[in-house]
Amino acid sequence: MKIDQIKSCYIGPHISPEAFISEHIFIYLLKGKMQGFDGHKSYSLVPGQYTIVRKNNLARYNKQKEDNVFEKVVVIFDEAFLKMYQQKHGVASQSYVSNDVFLHLHKTDLVPQLFLQQEDDSTREKLLNILLQTNPGLENILFDFGMPAKIDLESYMNRNFRFNVAIQRFAYLTGRSLTAFKQDFKKVFNDTPGKWLIQKRLKEAYFLIDKEGQRPSDVYIEVGFEDLSHFSYAFKKLFGFSPTQLRK
Image 1 (tube, rainbow, N blue to C red):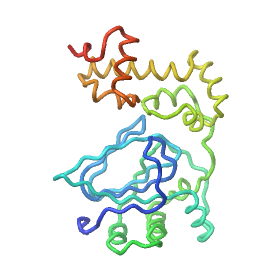
Image 2: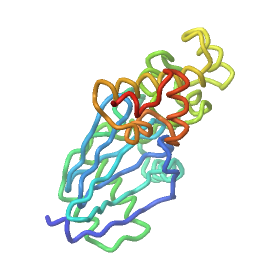
Image 3: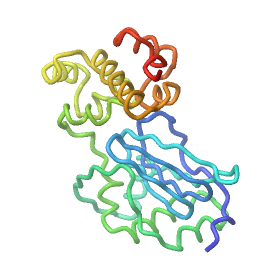
């Protein structure tokens, strides 16, 4: 099956490009390469492969063009659609626990065959039919509509501090109200979330620049800063010298 006959498309409601994955995202790579990171593991996607990025998780991924071309198919399995599908087809699900954010899916020619056809309102439902038939247990992930459960705060924050999301988001993802999150955070780290995140990110940046030889202009986004000048200012305030001086 030649995937170069398939064109890029986006099916489903648009979602925010921030690191927080608010709905399940199906990604089918047609041309180029993709690298994903979930705070713990790295993932790669090459042409012909597809994955689902699970909702209620933090993740980032970047694209790499091949011959100046990058194409993918993106389908959003949002909660409203999944509830409608479950009611229509009577899908039963069980509780399921997994730390994987990028799900490995079994390949089948039915997927490229589907996207060689003209996309319409039924494409998303047809795709879900195929994925559920070829991936036993996937229904336990997709049709779990519960809120994130309360989890170990220390391990979660040490794994996800690089993601530049609001404190309220961290609270939600660890199964806490904002007030409970701040209280538990103080007990665990003896610091406020804001101060701890800045110091943790700066220390990680120090390591990447000093030991890994990375450039400050590449590091600041990787460790969770939005602005290079703010990163440089905070770095100098903590260590007494700028990140560029550390490389010399």
